Structures are given as C-alpha cells and as structure tokens.
Image (cartoon, rainbow, N blue to C red; front, side, top):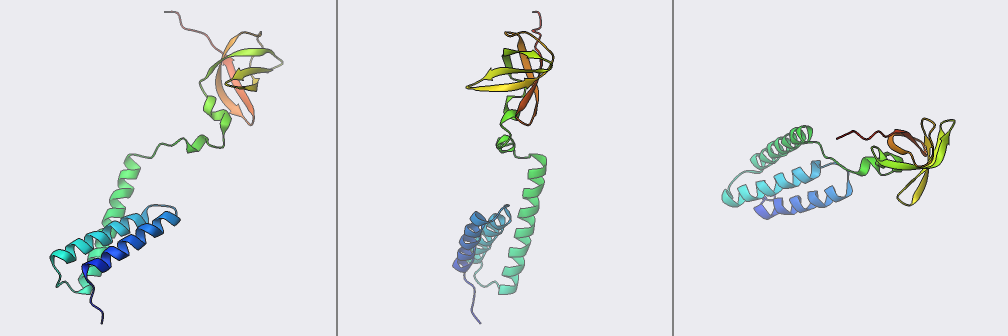
Amino acid sequence: MMKFVFWHWWVIAVVLVIVEAFVAGTFFLWMGVSAAVVGFVLLIAPGMGWEYQVLLFAVFSVVSIALWLIRLKKYPTRSQVSNLNRRAARYLGHIAIIKDPVVNGLGTINVDDTIWRVMGPDCEAGTKVKVIGAAGTNLKVEIFMEKNL
C-alpha cells in the first residue's frame, strides 16, 4: 500500500482550493486548509498512520467549516450585489427635485443622468422629494421637509 507523505496532503490541498474556485460556497476552501494542516502535522510526525491522517483531516475539516459558519452567522457579509439587478433600490433615501409636476400621483425626477418616473403626492416642479421605495421602474417619493436647525 502507498504511504502518504506530507506533500501528498499539500497536493490534495491545492486540488481542493482549485475545486473551490469552480463551486459556490467555501467548504472546499476549508477542506483544503485542513489538508494543508495535516501535511504540516505529517511533516512534524512522519510516522503517523493513514487512518490517523484521514481522521485528523476529517476533524480539522468539520471544525474549520463549523467555525467559519459560526463566524459568518455572527458577521454576515455585506454586499452591493443585492441591488445589482434592482437599480431603483439604489436610490432609496435619495433627495431629488421634481422635474415634471406630480399630477394624479405621477411625475418625473432627474437622478444622475436618468429621468425616473415617480409616484407620490401631487406637487409642483422644483419640489424636493425623498425616494422612499421602488415599484418596478417607478420610484415612490414623499415630499421632503428639511428640519429647522
């Protein structure tokens, strides 16, 4: 039977990290890290049997994945990706000036280089409004009242 040496585990670690690049999640990354750790342990204790190596790899994998999941739950990843396909959602809280008066609940504002159709209370052109929501390609607005200082 073939005897595992430390660099075998490092090759397995590299393969697992490469697999990680092609699949979603981070499980293979942590398994790769675990394989690298087993390689280092085997470098220090070269006489370890393959059964203990596999057991050590399994324990390191489960522990590292569990720790990662706990950390991810405590500190969730914040990303702009959630608004990637919801362009209107990026303007929530944005203050704009009414371009075309809002009549019967519909008007327009100019945000950045785009004219947006808005839904909100009737008001004249030049009124400041705050974007409070989005419905499809329309922005929901309310009249913006500046607080007195």
